[in-house]
Length: 224
Ligand code: AP5
Ligand code: MG
Image (cartoon, rainbow, N blue to C red; front, side, top):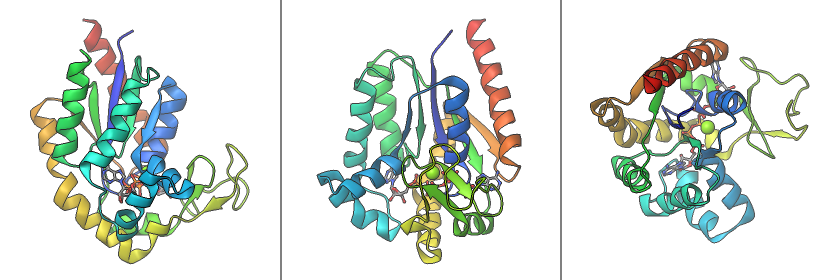
């Protein structure tokens, strides 16, 4: 079967992490969320984490060269040779160019950029109720997608926490950064025939089944 090289795009809170969990279960793809990688680096107080923290706390993007290096390392590690799922990268045209070059140089191609959309007011509602597991970043919502036991991750039993950047003022800043710096990627991927759109206001199950249907069609087309 052909490789699945996928990018998840969309505003904060659209459900990228939520869908990524399901797609990883479906296809057993190596999953690289730059948000999770950076939060782990902050936690470990590594050099990357110390540099990234100031940007993340403000709701700004970390510099392109810093995050692009992180992704290039993952693509070179060997574990992504049969496919990958990127969440939160690329997030600027500069990052998209870096990724395009990196994939080209390896003689590979992107399968699709999966755009999940959600209006700003829905994002604010979702992020105020989001909880993530302290160990692996599994995602829940106190109202829309609650864990079986309050405050405990269904998947690994670890503690559920609120992200530092989910404070309402930081969420608003993240949204404006998304509109300014990341939204231009929609046209960029559209021009390359790679964009596939999903309405993120449907239930997580509905969004998931539509993404699966689209990936099944793309896989069939690749075989023809
Ligand atoms: P990152 O961690 O990537 O955050 P984000 O893009 O702002 O996206 P979120 O993780 O907040 O939202 P999501 O779409 O994953 O939604 P989720 O599934 O959790 O980045 C954080 C920071 O790191 C950035 O601000 C930046 O500083 C830095 N960074 C990261 N990558 C970078 C890069 N490439 N370049 C530069 N800087 C970078 O869902 C949200 C909530 O909604 C959950 O509670 C969930 O349960 C609920 N929910 C999900 N789907 C549904 C649904 N269909 N219906 C109802 N509720 C739902
Ligand atoms: Mg996420």
